[in-house]
Length: 513
Image (tube, rainbow, N blue to C red; front, side, top):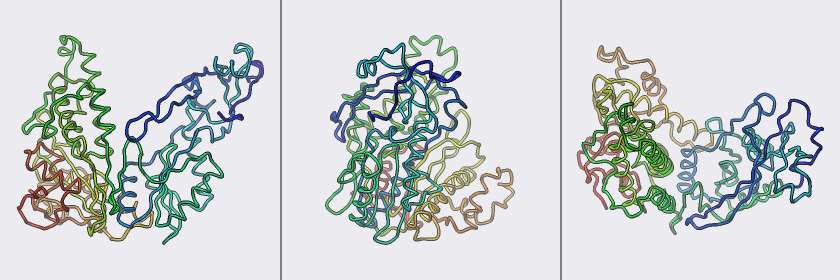
């Protein structure tokens, strides 16, 4: 604890109308990349639940770097042979200064250490203490001001991405609360930058990028990076009580039809519905985090199971356990980032027609690759009902084109854009013709204006549509349950086992190697 974090004052010195919040000591265990205990941490937290908006704080939002931005930076570093370094700020929040003081009761630990009586004195908090509503924002703005003063520019697409310089002096910085990751072609530039940080902050640099957000990064001798989640998978299996389950070959079986959400009658007649609901929500939350960070093969199952978070049935829990069995069998499956000859950004978009038996809505899915490495993916039930499969494909393309433009302008902003457009691979010839004809057919006149975004993207040459065989449509695994052979083949493409399918009109199925 910094000595200037707070000062002891008489209770009578507190201005009238100001909240005196309670304090609480929090104990936490920090783990390393192998799941072993790294250290025990103790924090004194401010009782932020007592704060008054407009009096004790105003704005509280603090951004964190998006997973897509991190994977893009990782892909760029592998492709361009950049160096990668990471580090963390010790007691990060305490390094931010409050613009106005807040007041806190003297906790028993502080009273014992300082030799004061809790009932007679209070603490005037001067530093950015944990537990304050505004604490994350104050810390982020403190670090942002510092980086901007050192010549960095902040990305408008992701405010936690900073960059400066060019050529051998280029630096790309990503911020996730108190973790900092730096990418650049020169070790000297990275060392100099970390030296600057240590002069202004309590910063602990690491030799290389090895562990970040419960993910382990393993570098091979040829410079490839594998994103490994084994320690998190083991922990989630233990937490869900399925560490000894039998593995399954796919997340969901072909033909799986999930029943509708539980109604009031089902909840009342169920023996222990609260336990079922808690178990289901815990399990879905665990696999959603895993899917978001490094497992696109779970996207379709997550998208379907998450629809029943508030009202699950026993059948939904059975399907969820099937996903855990699949995760058990693919415990060591890892995303691979390697240097390739692929063009800069390539996307695959697909849709399934009337996939939801309860609403008639289709499921859209897309995945984008930067230099052959997967950087973002999604699978979701569409907001509108498509009358035909072509309409569903158009709606999926429109949603995917938004991400395509985001990726293009993100790369342009950080000075790493090489091409002028993003390719999206589509397996439906009628869909491509409809887009090229400006959706002028009478069949599509009822579509909402939001789905005309794909037309604007193509006219601006931000997006170029390419035809690909249905059997090589990588996004197919994001929109429906597939047979074991086809699922594994497409999974091999996503996880870098075989190259991206790019040829047109070839009906061959990618083979495992």
